[in-house]
Image 1 (cartoon, rainbow, N blue to C red):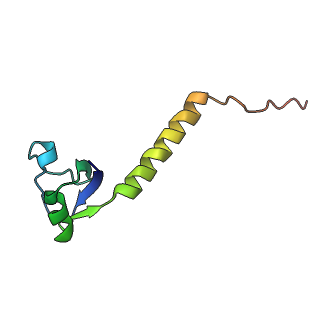
Image 2: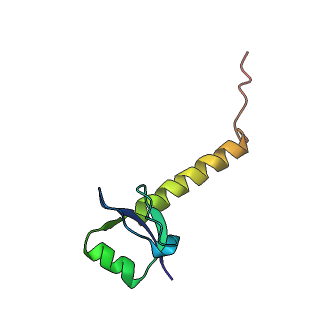
Image 3: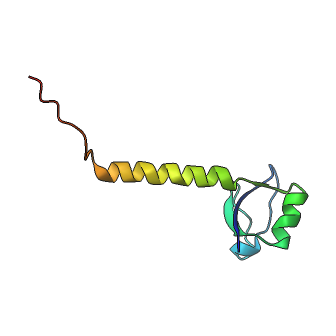
Length: 80
């Protein structure tokens, strides 16, 4: 099943069956695609932010990998 990263429209509290009926966080959250979410999207109760969230997560992973590398591959300055 497809996952979506959805954000509630400003000022709305949207119950999330994917989160035990707790509200979808205002910053958004991952949910499984379903008729419930299709209806919320159609009524513009939520916005699909999947692409942007995937890009944010990829950037965070890249930054973490670079930090873990700790400068490996960098040339030393040997000029004196």
